[in-house]
Structures are given as structure tokens and as C-alpha cells.
Image (cartoon, rainbow, N blue to C red; front, side):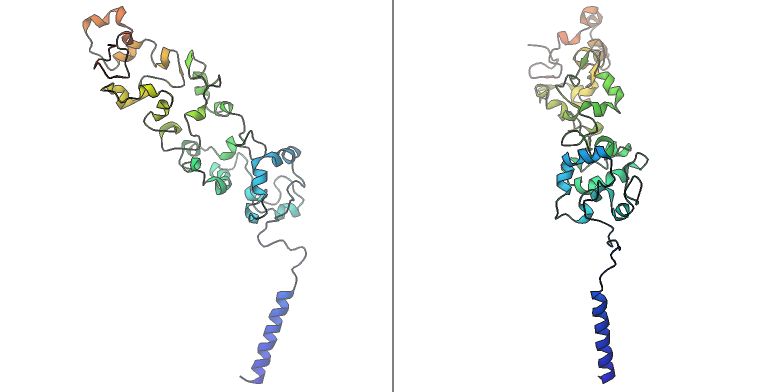
Length: 293
């Protein structure tokens, strides 16, 4: 190697070292766009400033060891450097918003970054709520929600906001005592999604049998309709005008839908209450006709 080449190499090394030591411009934002600082309430709404520190999010997202992209407000709203530099304010700096006009999948995506690992959320994206355009923020308020789950409204009132037809059924003479606070929607349904119809927690009437275990069986003599079509073939689980939540006012009307051929004597008015004799109608261990022995 010649002296000239050695001198050139030394010059290049010196120039590279000098550039590496140059401090960045004081007003240059971080390349990531995240502030990593507690700027969030500089121009924020007063109600959120008061309520957010009391929520589970505040403690979980303030851990210093979390990456900047997963800490504080920026964990949900995205990089806030431009927002902070501009003095804050609604719609400033291109931060992520959760307005109703934003498609539901986009509003739910930031939540699922942290919460998708929860076993109750494994089926959320394929569940009926997600398919119907319901986002996490339609039911949960991350700034000031009610309770540990930060619901927009408490308990049944939240479900009633959309399911008005079900609310009306709970006002019928025979109903599961949801309005009375004995049971709740969440006792039977998993709102985040399941592989079962109607977001039920369990399949094949297992949800009903959690409370009505005495009717589950197995029985020596099974009621075929109960086994093949399930509880809702005869019962309306939310509420009904018929006793025992039956879908027909008269018991015989319901039975005749399947048992169209009956003894001639059974058409008399005295036989219109079938379960007066066939008392073990869900199944029997003693009689194939479900008669009481």
C-alpha cells in the first residue's frame, strides 16, 4: 500500500468519526415519532385528565420498561411527537382516533395488540359482534369506563342498548330474572365471540344445563325432540307469555306440533295439559311415555 493510499484511509476514518460525534439538531424529532414523555394532558380534555389515571390502563401502560410504542397514550393513539410539537388539540398531528366514522376493525386493532392473548378474545374477530361492525370502543371506554373492564355502561344496560327485542322479552310474565339481578347476559353469552351460535358460552345446551342440571340426563328413555332439537325447540330462554318459558301458551299446542297422531280420547279439553300425566317430559328412567310411576 502506498503512502497516498494510507493517508486517504486515515482521512476517511477521521471524517467518519467526526460525523458520528456531531450532536443531532435540538429541534429534530425522534426518528420513531414517539415522545416517550408525559405530554399527554398538555391540551387534553379535563374529564379524561381526571378519570384516566384511575383506570387499569394508566398503571399498566406507564411501566417504564415498556417500549415507547406500547407506553402511555401512544400505545393506543400512535406516535405523538407531531401532536405534541403542534401544541396538542383534537385532530392535530395525525394521531389515531376512535371516532364512530372509523371502521370497526381499525378501532379494535390497537386493543387487540395487547388483549388478543386473552383466551376470552381468541374468537373475537370471527365472532358475531365483530362481523356486525361492533368495535371494542363501542362497549369499552379506555379513559373512564365502568369497573375493571371499563364498560361504557354497567352490565345489562350495555347489552340493552342494541338488543331492544331481547329487553322486551325480559319484561314478559315468565322470564329469566335478568332485570332483577339474579342472572346476567354474561352468564350465558360470551360477547367477545365463540364458535357456538348466538355467542353462547357452551354448545349443545350445555349453557342451560349449567343451572338446570337435573334435566340433562342421560335418561333410560330420552325425549327425542329434546335430544335432537334442544331446549329452544320448546322454550324461549329470554322470556315468554307461557309458563315455564314455553313458546306456546297451551302445552298441548306445543306437543301437537310433533305428536299429531294421538288417541281419540286425548282431544278432549281435559287432555290439553299433556304434562299433567307425562310429567317426566324431559326424559324418564322408568317409563317410555314419561308417565309418573
